[in-house]
Length: 371
Picture 1 (cartoon, one colour):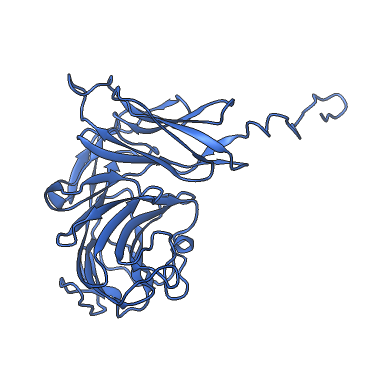
Picture 2 (picture 1 turned 120 degrees about the horizontal axis):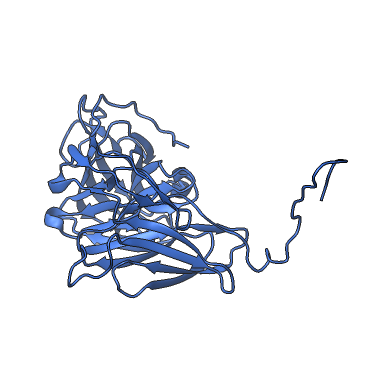
């Protein structure tokens, strides 16, 4: 306690016996969902990006002519969105193949590919290993790279990878999280690669894709950006993740409540690590799909014997904007009341607005990561 003569005393806690047993917990980042699917809804999942509290460049960890994300595997082609939870509006897309020697025995491999529908403002962040393998192209043919950009509308990147005993791949940076866009990835595995996977969340789970069909990827855009996602209104599997930091790395219990009268999902994991759970939603409230509208997805986090924290991950009153039939050029959305992240606080959202896909001229090439 300290005070000046004739003044009120002020005080500050310098040490607390409770800190050692119940350190404060802090939610990091916000909630963003993305849809990945193939033709006619095949292999459709609504998922978060791979999320970490580090930059995309740090996570790619390019060394010895190879990526070292931890997802690498011989004979496997990996795709994923990446989001730095310390800078959650910064979104990247990775596409890598194989694994670095001596961590795995990657045989000689040949892979062609094409990324189309790349929105304005996106830059090339990593060429693994060179521009002859991953660069802008005006061609719509897999494996053709002319090092030119389409002058209007969305753009393409051509991919032509030839490698052995390491990885090949590339990454793009600057994908918007608040605009509608849809990218399309096509590939041809000539030899040395036979599995195509899309990773998400903590990265431990992946959706296998059919390499004979394109993969479509788009964000779930909402009317307001309040750190919550729309409550699922379509039957299907969705994944939600959260990151809770603490001054120590103690084990925490995460309880995911789905809002549809199904059993909670309880996960145990250390503080400071992205923790995820998946759920098969049944759709809107009905005789066969429970819950009381407006429904929410919430996560409750606690250490044994300590106060529980909770956070809203999805809210039924946040309107979902989807890009039906792989289009998404123009959509209309309505605002609504949603719950904020401060335990049970409520806040008002703006009224109706509309979003359009932004289309402008090409961006300059960049070989440096954003921060």
